[in-house]
Figure 1 (cartoon, rainbow, N blue to C red):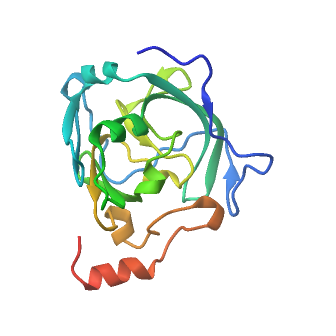
Figure 2 (tube, rainbow, N blue to C red):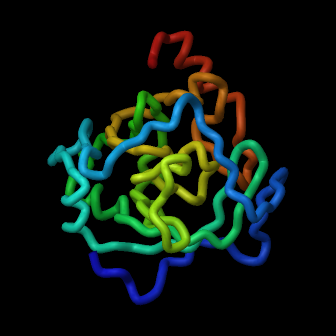
Length: 210
């Protein structure tokens, strides 16, 4: 994969700290359950659901795609923010281009090891700064931070950037994932403090969905 001459800068302007956040130089490790250890040669990823061309990738297949670097700030729902990160990986937009979402696709369910899910509106997933990220600040991602590969969606709270990502399922309507079913917001915009509590999720739970 050939690196770009200049990373895409996804950082906001002068006011970079969302409301209610505290800036830190550390990168706290937070996740549900145990850290899965996934050897790159055993990693598999697929795009399926409401797409014209579902497909599966292995680690070596990533070399078919141009490598992209993204400079960004990241924000955790637990109220910490870390500025000036550089992630490297494959652009989600390139994968979606090959999968060709159907006209009725409006959302995605992100799947990750061992059994994690999180949802995203398609318009939030299909952005130039979003990556399947393999590196952070010039080094491979550690297992604790989602290595060998994680999703990066820097404009939303970090729980949407699923660690140990294994698939993207395109959907005809939005559905809650793991944390969304358990009370987190369906979208998770840091600038609007979309942290917890969504009437949409409560209605979905009463209706028996996921």
